[in-house]
Amino acid sequence: MQEDFRKEFLPLVSKPNWVITWLINIFGRALLLVMFIVLAVFPLLVSGSIGILVVVGVLYYPVWAIAMYHFFRHIRKNMAITIKKIRVDDTGIHFYKRDGSIDDVLYSQLGPSYLSDDYEVYISKEHKTWMLAVGIDRNETKVVFDGTHLGSIYYIKNARALRARFIEGIVRFRPDLKIDPFVFKEFSIHPEKFTFDGKRYMKHVLEGAIIIGIILLISFGIMFLVVKL
Image (cartoon, rainbow, N blue to C red):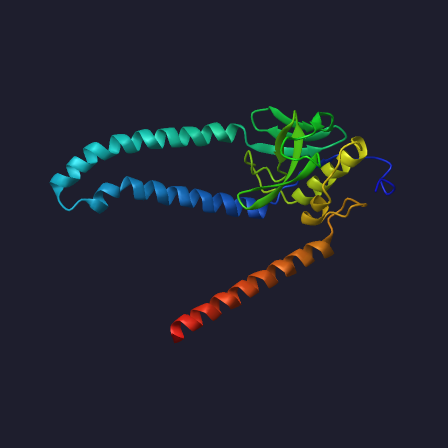
């Protein structure tokens, strides 16, 4: 597995896709604006008379103002720790945040996890999504390469390449660690070149499409039988 290594382990930095970033920002802000307006006029929507409107307004708007204050304060606080850059190098992966702090997952930190007896590097499911997991101090640490666990100031378009480079770094600098072969299969990473395996990825897409198609056919078949009965 290590015979095809490049002579140098070059650092890899996250790259933004500004088109998708702006679309996400526009949609998100529009959604917040609609929510703000709906909540602001809520008493007008539920009140049938002036008297009820006054009572609802007196009780509702103080709660609404306090909730909005804490909500926007929470957003402002989280904006300070959003990721502005991800870098994978010969020491590990580094998440550079807007407030100037850095979160690191270093190769030297990696070791066993109490959730995996056979591998130190494996995959773990969270919210129906497979994520790369490693052991640090015997605890499981999920490593996300698109910045979604902390929030990113832009959509990262080379998240797959960052993940592949990180795994290559583990194999190169921590050959004592065991990597679950399913990591390479699930993330479509070539096990020797550590590049995105397009053929394997398309195979996964095709398998998923076939499974969804079978489920839809069975569902339509059941619906048809129910209607006929």
